[in-house]
Image (cartoon, rainbow, N blue to C red):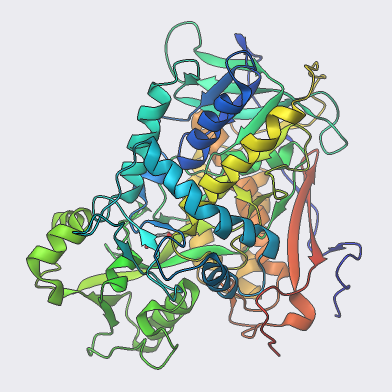
Length: 573
Ligand code: SIN
């Protein structure tokens, strides 16, 4: 069916689904106020909090950070490879822009990419000034490496392969030097409080939290506020195998969807090509083997020792992530093997220790010595390229709600995020939010009685949901598998919870996001970036240039297509 042209009315492409319009929760037992609440404490959340506090000034308003666990429990600290920016003497933002657009397979927002790459270098220097210590060469210059899809060495790294941990450390220390930023830990953001109907202009008036602690703020409470910045990370736990930590249950995306925000590009779940394979039964967070290992010369081989990436792409083992993940999967299917191998034995002990000490220790802890042995690897869920749709300044469709980092879809990643652009996105777009939010802070408003239909599914369905998503909405998808999974998820949505607890809240969020991902993946009948349909194996710009948007109104979701011009300048049949 021909698609409408850019700017035309979105075309609804999936059946309406019925999910909870809000999470069942007890009435708030405590209350606090803050002008701005930042939900999340990774690079995006803490950068937003620090910059907002600076922009608002001492009298300008209170900033409160809410985090689901400890400050360092999110995805940032697990980032290994580094942070991409045109920092090298020969590099330019224009080259970084081109690599980002090509990796994004025609689905990026060019203006957002331009903002990312031009503001990136200054943002990284600001992080350094804040205290983050990146690795340097003997001359004292930043040591830069390469990852998939980059045509230049532009990945700054720290502690060899502990970049995220160093950035997280520096940001936590900086927040520690700003005691006026209040922090509530071990708090799940349950739902937004709105001053009008969700999806019909209702603006942020607060947020309900469930605090797992002791003392005055235990249990469900509310924060009355004038704006919320969502920086709550991704949703990798919708799959049974992911590089994401256990906290990545899509809470921010689900909360935003219920409140009337649009989720965009959800079908573009990125599967990292080289996740250490620990066996078919291994579930939950799996060890990442950074792309930087290939950037430093490691290569993929099959059981017969064939370097199968050669000849597949001009960058061979350093092709963009979607290309490598697909090549690994194809070879796995051709040879009927559950994984391929990464060979970095030639690094020797010294280079492994110096460049990749964390990965070396992880491999050894799982009984593989990469100095002498091949590392078993297979693709696994790594990153949500889509999320809560924002404009160039982090604004969502809900007045007073902003989003940044993995939870957001700012348009920089398109159909396949370029390696190491994720930390950069959090940094750049949190700075952008802080630049505009103080000037557009809304007056205090009263929450209305929440008319959305409450619901909850039991935590016991989580494991089945993750297995179904992995089997049918994983790297390789087809219409039959997707139809099976949407039926299965509809069945789960009709299963009421008998307990109101964290497991049920998280599982309901996982179900909400899984349904949206499955609908978008079903609707997009082509292969593009990280969305691979075996029944529609080609990219199809004539039909599918544009975005799939999921919205919810009182628990009913719809998935619609909004056309847009392709952004990588390539013409595909
Ligand atoms: C990696 O180190 O391979 C992951 C980096 C990223 O996800 O950008």
